[in-house]
Amino acid sequence: MKKNIKWLLLVSLTFIAACNNDDDNNTPEEVPVTPGSAVFTKYVALGDSFAAGYSDNSLFKKGQENGYANILSQQFAAAGGGTFTIPYANDNIGGLLFGGQVNPAFGPRLYFNGTAPLPVSGVPTTEVMTHLTGTFNNLGVPGAKSFHLVANGYGNPAGLAIGAANPYFVRFASSPSTSVLADALIQTPTFFSLFIGGNDVLSYATSGGVGKDQKGNPNPATYGSNDITDPAVFANVYSSMATALTANGAKGVVANLPYITALPYFTTVPYNPLTAKSLGNNDEAVGKATIQALNAQLYGPLKQALTAFSAGDRINLLSETGANPLLIKDESLPNLSAQLTAAFTPTLGAQTAAFYGAVFGQARQAKATDLPVLPTRTVIGTAPVAGDSGIGIAPPAPLNKFGVTYPLQDKHVLIPTEIAEIKTATDAFNTTIAAVATEKGLALVDTRAVLTQLASTGIKFGNFSLTSAYVTGGAFSLDGIHPSARGYALIANIFVDAINAKYGSTLRHVDLSTYPSQYPKSL
Image (cartoon, rainbow, N blue to C red):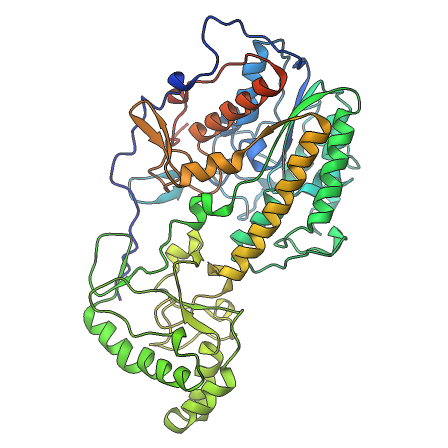
């Protein structure tokens, strides 16, 4: 079976020069830059990987320089802003060392080689255990959830082994017992940005919904790393942070959260890539003869058996001319394992029938409402190993092709029930963010609307546009979640708009054309 998942590119990756938003600039050049009622003397940025400038699956110096928080600080400088210190990585390779050892969970950054994203070569030099001294204005911590920002000891090296600490914060926390919020408050900020909450749903989404929705559970200490945060927990934490940050009169800007469907990580891999021959559109060409054999030996018998149990709509015969959906497991479906085992026993024998029952008891074909996650693109058509099969053994041929003859598992696809959980939580978090912004008199950035626009019509600049298309869209980096440098510049501009509108300042936009949509292999 030929592997044929294609990349959505080989158009032009260099629609560089004209993504300039000067035509859309709300602040004419002749208007002096003023702070309005805001005071930018001491600016601190709190948040997660977005605030840190994470990009291309890693944290590296150039990405940090081009993060929205640093871009904002540069715009603030013209309106009385002070120095903005960043806990820089040591290099532009990305990745982390733990006691001199490379940790594969924190890999180097990605670059595009013209065909696919690849990790850059080289050994990381950023050592987690080498502590940075001083105070830092950029307090963005990749991987942080809302409640992590108020957790004492989140930067304690002793907590790394049990998941109670974050290696990025370990590098620059002012003390092992401090919290991110405490390190912000000791600087007595006059202005702050708070963009947090993405990871409170995102880790669940990127895991394919493997975690748990913790709605109703008020104790984050009991959460798994891929769980959705209880909205009440988020509300309490978020409100307490805003109260602490504004206690001494500081002004600030907060941002709501986008829907995951605005991120290419969830929208790039099609639900129906299986074809008899290549259609040239990100497909998986399996061949006409293979489709005929699949219909005769697998899909036909499965449909017949499932129809007997009033579940025939789970499986349809494959088309020889069109695009066919992936075969997936849907854990929200009634498990018909016992029924399928009984149905297949007379023809296949008890042992093989039990295998079919275990594998296909909750199987169905994907629909347009399902979202295969980005890493699934390299899984389709490959053989499941024991640890990934969901049944503890490696399935035999020919039932050993993920998405074709063997269902993709929970971690590979977000199904509608999981997407609904994510949306419900996101809406609840955004309600809290909007309410806190109103209560505390803070500027509110609607990133949800802007990123939704990127995913639908795109955002035009002159004769060019930014979209959320993977690789070619220009707004997102190669990890499919975090912005590119140009995407971060766009975020900085919408922060500027919100700040100007709220505080009467006259901060200026940055020119998007000066920020790359992709970083080269060498920096």
